[in-house]
Length: 365
Ligand SMILES: Nc1ncnc2c1ncn2[C@@H]1O[C@H](COP(=O)(O)OP(=O)(O)OP(=O)(O)O)[C@@H](O)[C@H]1O
Ligand SMILES: [Mg+2]
Image (cartoon, rainbow, N blue to C red):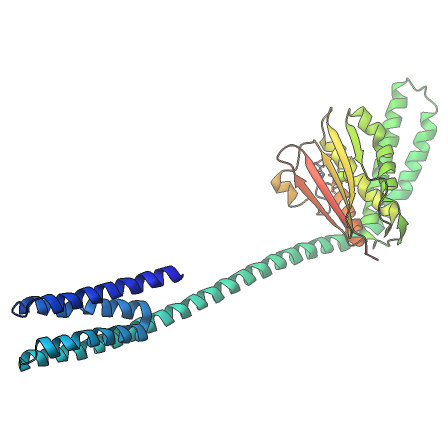
């Protein structure tokens, strides 16, 4: 910043000294040259006024006047009419320096004001943008809450109307199955019937879990132990799919207060999703880490990843891309994690799978 100022001043001094030297050294009979040099003084005066405003303009015209006056007085003395014209020029130097300086100063003040207004506008625009983003999130949450409240009413009716007949279907199917040898096709059909009834039952239970307010138990829970249980629960499924499940955890973790059973259910939902998305030969890696204030659990799979258009909706109840999915796994999981004051985030790893990151604060009660 300092450099351009000193260069400008140096430039002005150079021009003024140069013009003055021309005045003092050019013989007086070349008066037409003196007329030109006289006008050349306007150049530094105007430049100084533009660069440094009113003060700059006046200071420069004053210096020019002081340098030029002795030249008139001592070299031109005796030519009264010529002298008068030149004294008048000195007055004009000061008028031009003052007016140009004033105008440029006003212009500069106006552009500062404009810049301030533009900054203010930009700030307001940014605030507006933040607020509209917040509004969109609130609206999305409201839409989900609305769905959930409808879901709550539906779930109560469904649970009542479906669960009991399902129990009877399952019971009678089991009795019927015993009438056939395991290698009979009818045994297999009835087995399918039983499995499907179990699935329906699970769907109803998911509905109920989703709609009921989650009552979290707040006792000390062992996250490593819960994750190990989840891994043993999915071990058969993973083996059938030829998927390796890897677990990285420190020997001990800080004490975590929360609902172990609910967290286990949340972890199970994520691991099942990971297994369902991962092709044969793939891998699911579960990692636990602790910082001073939180626990971080990540699940990384080598599956298909999530398409951007799906990523926007995966936490919405009933959003599923699977033929047999209910779309309730992730909303339930999110509810459980947020019930512990935590956060959950799903990131697509550029077509090389999905990373689910959960952060659970240690001081949440
Ligand atoms: N690890 C993952 N890899 C790829 N896609 C995933 C993964 N986890 C979730 N998804 C996507 O998110 C959607 C919603 O998952 P969510 O668990 O809520 O329901 P779902 O798995 O489809 O059904 P449900 O859990 O009831 O069986 C899935 O249908 C899938 O498209
Ligand atoms: Mg799921």
